[in-house]
Structures are given as C-alpha cells and as structure tokens.
Image (cartoon, rainbow, N blue to C red; front, side, top):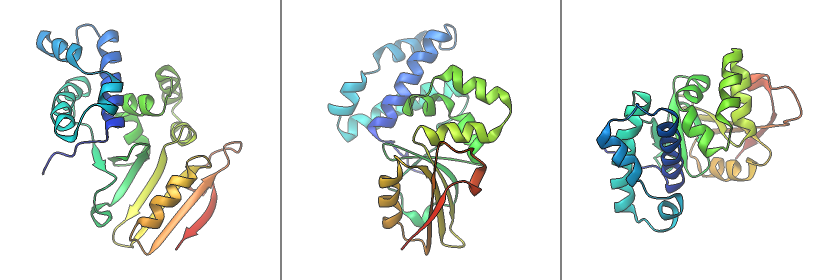
Amino acid sequence: MAQITPSPDAIAAMVDSIRVFDVDNENAFNKSEKKLVQSLPSKTFILFKMGQPELDLLYRSVKHLWNGMTGGDPEFKSENDEDAHLDGAYWMLPGGVLLSGFNHFQTAKSNKLLICSMLNINPLIFEKILASGDRNDIISLVLARGGVRTLISRKNSEVVMQTNESSWPWVKNKLERMYHKNKIAKILDLSKHYDGWTSGILIRIS
C-alpha cells in the first residue's frame, strides 16, 4: 500500500510532538535519531515553504521517529481518499486528517500526542482525564476542542458525524460532498453533559 502523506498541518503537529517527546524523554532516541530530530524544519517552513515532494520525504523521517516514539506507525487516512474506501470509526481533525482505529476512545488514546498538538490540548489535562477511566470524558474533550467523531458504514451507505457548533460549517461542507445515502450530523451543545452518540441535535444532510 502506498504511503499516505498527511497535510502540512498534521506533519507540523507531529514534528512538534516529537520535539516535546525528545525533551521529556532524554534517552528515548539514539544518537542518529536525535540528530534527525534536531534537523526537522520549523512549523512555518513546513506550512509555507515545502512542496509536495519535500513533504513526502519529510514524512518518511517523521514516520520513522514516530514509530520509535510510540511503537507503531501513525494511523493516517487522507480526508481526500475515495469515500467508498472508508469504513469504521474515525476522528476527523482540522487540516484534512482522519485518524482510524477500533473505536474513538482507543484512537484518541493511541494518538494522544498528535491530537493534543493539533487541537491545542494540554497533555497533562488529557492524561488526567484518561486516568479517570471515563471514556466519554476523553471523547467529549476531543469534540470540544474541534475533533469530529465520525462513524462510516460502507455496507449501509451511512456516515454519522458528531461535532461542536464551531466545527459545524466545515463538517456540513464535508458531508455534502460525501457519496453516502444517509448523511447525519449531531451538533453538540457543549454546556450540556456529553452522553455518547445520544448527545447532540440531529440533522440529516441531503
């Protein structure tokens, strides 16, 4: 399967996460990997100066470091993939990133560094909520900061997206462009208690 290169926003967020991890975990990377970390470009350079070939090459280095940091490859799927190939649970993040996984809690947990970086969540707060054991609290936090909880059934030609009000405009635009027969949004009132998929005002998109 060909490498999927994430958006510049996502790569920049991963680079920030790697730098923070390197500072907090002095012996995590070997000597050559530390040199690689030090050679990573700035966020501004990634966002505004790099073309696609350079981003592809950078992502190879970032992916290697990420594997050493987390023990696995980042689970990226491009938002621009054919919708017909998408099936299951995803977090949709700003910048055209879909994080896939078995369920939304596990995906948020296994990608916590990236999610905290992209959504500007304090990692200590994330860890504290994670330690509380309430899965809905973590999901609610990601939703409140702009992540979109997405469930796609290829078999039923259905997509459901749960979002906060501020993310609603780009969620609506995304849903309108998807091929699925049933397209559903659930818009959250963040002042109310989050209770999983039952939360939110239901809107069907034609």
